[in-house]
Image 1 (tube, rainbow, N blue to C red):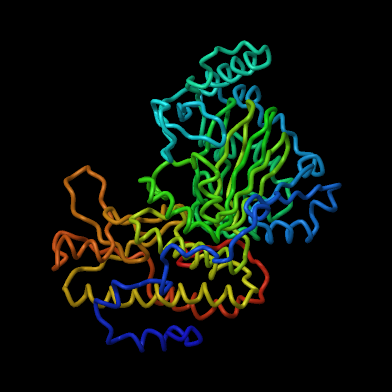
Image 2 (image 1 turned 60 degrees about the vertical axis):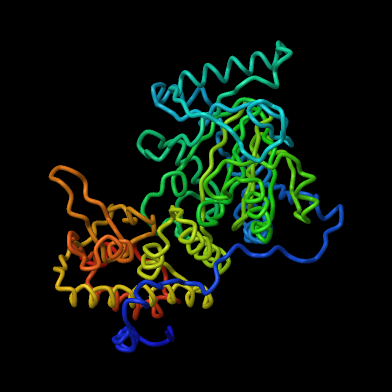
Length: 494
């Protein structure tokens, strides 16, 4: 489709298209794992130095230079930024958090303690890629006491000879999204420059509903040896990580151009790159495969900026807390890499945490998109999904299946297919279940697999086609307009 056409022309042109076109709504022609760059790296290039920006004052903190520095580096340290904008780190200390909600039930990962550049199997007989952990629960107060006890042991050097065989507890993914309970913590981080904030008009993730741990605050409480296994951020969005201390963390990172090579190594070692927990057991293996690895220390107060698609894994050196969240700068690379991972996730039957289609329509409704290339990518997404909605509705009518207008409220969660985990936009197929049981949502493809006639399904429509057409046509007019009040696709329906 020519995205310079208006909505009426697009829908008119696709009238004769059939089921095959409905089922093949892909934003990219090729979304396979990429081959890494071919040039052979030198020894120095295989162990690149981390870029550090020393922020001297608040003026420098809010400078365009700092933002440019972040956007040009795969990963970087922002040092003294916390002091430059007067962030009170004590608000995120274990003592303060436990005073606010001592009974908060938190997820614990029990892990085997290993050296940062090693990873052993459960019996410590051979090095493996699998990163083992078991799940348990504790309260915030219980973990704070555990953390304090381990810290006292470390300070007094009262270590057992079998220290390496000990298990440790990692308090992970602690939800700080409740702005009433954690108001002071949220407000404190709003002191950061706009491009680093949890919420801001310059952050794409502020234009989609709440995604826990991405556009909300998440806390990690650690003792020495706690590991965050290897991964890229959800849908390749950028990430901000602030070390509250008092201890340090050691980071390992690989530029996004080499994620395909990392994926291949995971496959060769029988771990799933997306779904499993993994940790390279030996950095020499990466270097032998021509993969560069950043290795650096994050100190108290340091902010680590993780750029689009950067692969990384982290281990705590001392007892510390980290607070982290994701951001989406309005850049072509950010949106394109998000789309690329969105399509690859479909092939892997892996749920995309960021609902890219709903995000794109919300951006069209409300965002000030001034980059022409970015606007073209967004408009391509709108064009394809508007066309797909139109074709599905026509197909369903030919099947004599009733279409019920359901609408969509502002705080409704984005629906995902029960079977293939793909985001479902506008036209939902709801299975008819027994009374008092929650309904299940299916995409058109999975609904047809269950019933070629769609018998047993209710078809719900969330948006009128005219609403989508108007948003599509008006999007180009908004490219140079200023931000208005936050409307979103849901609000524009009313």
